[in-house]
Image (tube, rainbow, N blue to C red; front, side):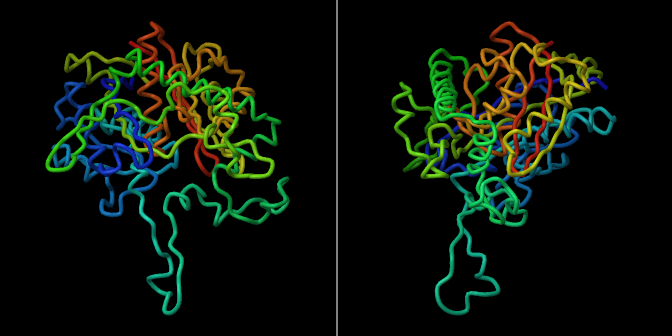
Length: 408
């Protein structure tokens, strides 16, 4: 069955500890759920499943997608699931929903992703069965999550970076590994970062994001409510000189990865309503686009940032297309080094990629980004009077998805 997209929206992206720090993940997800259904003009009882990605679930909301759906006022008869395929979780929610529709199991699916990284707690692993005497360690749930399983599957004992052999590593280190593997310079990375911040600033100022963003009501003191409706992670007026002064974070002595050429730690949510074309025609609904292809791929976890390369190759093999066929492309910038590696090996034309910025300038609320880049791609295609687009992103552990969409 042909699967079409009826609506696509997102919240503005909050910076770490910023405007959205008091809005927890279920509440954040409920905002885009409600708006996506409203924009689609769909009777919510027709939704076969609600599927949202999230990497770092709220501890008070097991299966927070279900909690968010109920908070959004969606029918309690509609099931819901929370999906974790690391940074690709939001895209996995959309793609798996698409397959449910294709096989006839559901007519419509509400899919997306959410992350409130500002609300990820610290935890004490030894508190339950150990810690009987003396001090113990409090662990940061974000930092541990950003090690993406490497405490179990450690850096190879014969890996080229001797200092990491047999040890766990944070995702920023994987960007350093890629920079060394492909001789990606600090200047190349800072150029990508500058473009990202500048593009987000321009898109914010010229209203490019206005149609895709749903305002979030943020509760304040004494019952006051403010509307959060503009992305806040980008640095206004950023110039190369400011970026070049930043010190390396992960390899302090000889590294190239800085806070400036890395994605942010962020809060945000995004959602799409997808439906079979047959059902949309029956209901007289006008789709905005259709999903025309999907690819998946994986590679060595220590080089997780280049995982979009096999995913895009899989997509091209399945669709018979070439990279040059796409009018616009979204490749999430987890790190500038990771983006450069993908750009080089896929032969991407930078002028067509991330035209309104990406993870570095816009932010990377990990569970949402996979669906967010589809949302942003759809709106950018329409604004540029283009039709065919592709979105892809890397995931911790070395997994990736690539999705092709075409405007109606």
